[in-house]
Length: 99
Image (cartoon, rainbow, N blue to C red):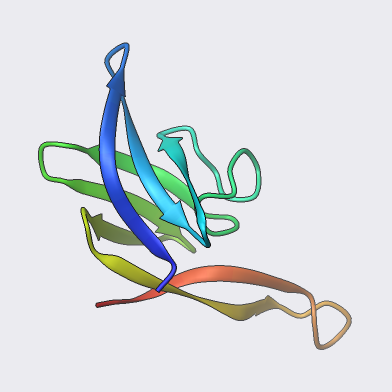
């Protein structure tokens, strides 16, 4: 388990989510993109919605929507996405299991 939604913060009417990812804790917002402006969500993923009222964070990974609930741990697994030469190219993180 290496991803957890820990809480919410609202600053100037903009919602932020407090998360723990891979031993790092910090704040993400609706503008967060993994690997571009944050290391607190998986590479190439982005925040679609932060909903403190529902205690939920929605992250998009590979055009799939993942609903992250407050206080639950999630496992992130690495898998191959593209082939580089004919066989290997880019590793990325994907949210797969909640427990």
